[in-house]
Length: 407
Image (tube, rainbow, N blue to C red):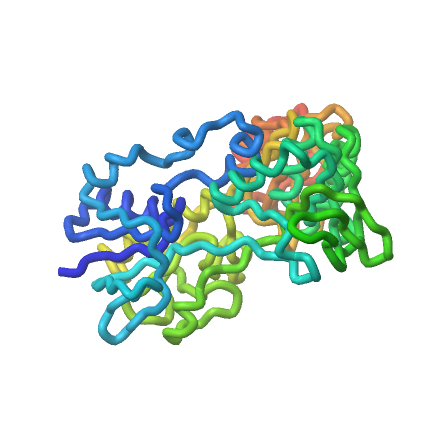
């Protein structure tokens, strides 16, 4: 019996191996990862690990002995480059073959690189090796330019500003976090970063990184030249799906899967950052989510389908995310895309407040900044798409949990 082959040893792949064993699967499980490390957490890379507050061994999802104890064959430093769907074999770039009865593709993606001249001089934050290289370059890099005003770029900016570097964030869109949050949240984070000395440039693109072996300057599309000793690109992720595409899978933005995480290829599921899936919290639209929650919950769904087929429940996990920047903890629940109204709950100037997103009167998402009670109380509102009058949502003296119970 060839068993289950899991390609990708990150959060999604590791969670799939664990879920299979927890659900009673007794066949062979092989977990193959391209990185040399055992499965580890990625979120701390742009936060505690970059800051030097968390050691490498504390990133591990499980102790190394765990995988052997659970009968999981862990192979690190192996990249799968081709899939033979008919014969159910996956071939590594080294030429090694792996047979499978079922395959779970959890390969995630690669950090998107800058395409401009000098782009390869920029660091990225995706793997532990990326951050190790970045940390080694910080000693003689007083001036840092970060390209991208999303979560990764802003988390790195917060860490590096606190370490004493002069940080400039360059964002091509007119506001920070434009793809994931409302303008009120964007404005709040803009003020937060500027209050910590970060120079934020909005609506500005990068046309070149100047330098030979290391950066000397970043040239902006308006002609300005920013002196830089180090550049970080935080401009998103390119899904790792080329082997699936070559095998015939539908890969418009990542790899398309159904409600039980199955690709169009027989015997192959896909989960995590690379999986384009129909999400009930996006109104059934297809989305690709890059989060620990999505990776872990899709892993459980794929494992259940392998054991139960069409009898397994479809994917319906409530999306949640978080981001730590300075002393601000952002907790998000739900998906705000498609919102037609927003309600500010509390006073943003107080540093503890929430933004509630509505669609057709129903709560679909919340961004909670230093407001854990709102986050916990709002989960039920999102999960059940509860309709609440905006004036009630705006009143922070009324617990969101109580609004959900009254609905």
